[in-house]
Amino acid sequence: MKVPEHINGIQPYVPGKPIEELERELGIREAVKLASNENPLGPSPKAIDAAREALTGVNRYPDGGGYYLTRALAVHWNVSPSQILLGNGSNELIELAVRTFMVPGDEAVMAHPSFVVYDSIVRAVGGRSIPVPLSNGRHDLKAMALRVSDATRLCFIANPNNPTGTTVNQEEVAEWVQGLPDHCLLIMDEAYYEYVTDPAFPDSLGFLREGRPVLVLRTFSKAYGLAGLRIGYALGPAEVITAMNRIRQPFNTNTLAQVAALAALGDSGHLTATRKVNQDGKAYLEGELDRLGLKRLPSQTNFIFIPLPKSLPSSQVYEALLRRGVIVRPAGPAALRVTIGLEGENRAFVEAMEAFLGQEGR
Ligand SMILES: Cc1ncc(COP(=O)(O)O)c(C=O)c1O
Image (cartoon, rainbow, N blue to C red; front, top):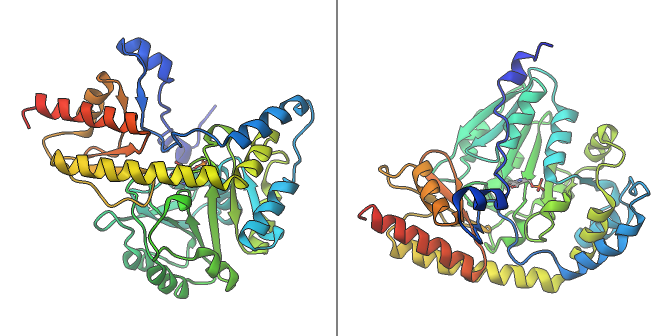
């Protein structure tokens, strides 16, 4: 069997070990996981009830059109159901967009570093990723505009960006959208939308209502706490959604995910509590990082990007924190990405970091 060259060049996603396995290997207990930007409060209790109730019906295939959830989202965002597509996480929607709009040789413009999945999916279809370095941790939209060519089919803006947590604002994106050629679809990946507090954050659905070629991605994995069920959605022009719909699997979102997402969407109390825990945790962590003399980027998300001093490679800090029972995510060789957790979890991270820095004589 010959694996095509463009597939061999893709870096596979490296999954973290199960937490129980890590604990066993390291001889630690009750490890704190601040690595995947999950909701530390858990899912909405209403979502749990809905999923539990639906369990007895899983001998049947799911509703392939996601009828109730699609309609609820259409009402929630005041768009037509024909402008919505459900996906097995927003990851699947990224894949569907790439497979729908790109053929071998086409280009996709994206920031670097940004969400790693864009690049691997673009390469998987024989497309070319055009990475544009961030500027001070933010998307450099002017530089990205210069890289849009006749071959560009997609542009990705992760807003807020993962791993940096930074945003681009309404004015910047509006200017960008104006200059976008007809042959290019702008993907606004807003996985962390519900955490954003900046009033200058772009009204991406406004661009959609103006008829711009914009596809907005949202997810139930982050603030809604349903990462393990895999469900997200795209909001876009009806013709874009129709095209993507042609190539999706008939039952791409499962029964439990659909009912849990519907219940979660209706549980505004849980979302409010989630935002509060995040705001409080962010304020605490920011204060403690400052106290420890560590740098950080301003975050509009449920994680914080910490650029490390040159003498401290991220792999070394990651390992040291791991041995102290705290799992974070190295973000390249010179930074860490730490998810904001519950009060005790954040404290455990700060204590582990402080102990490590003390041991390093800092
Ligand atoms: C920017 C961004 N987009 C998309 C996703 C994918 O989320 P999911 O597939 O769980 O909806 C993530 C997850 O980490 C993300 O950070």
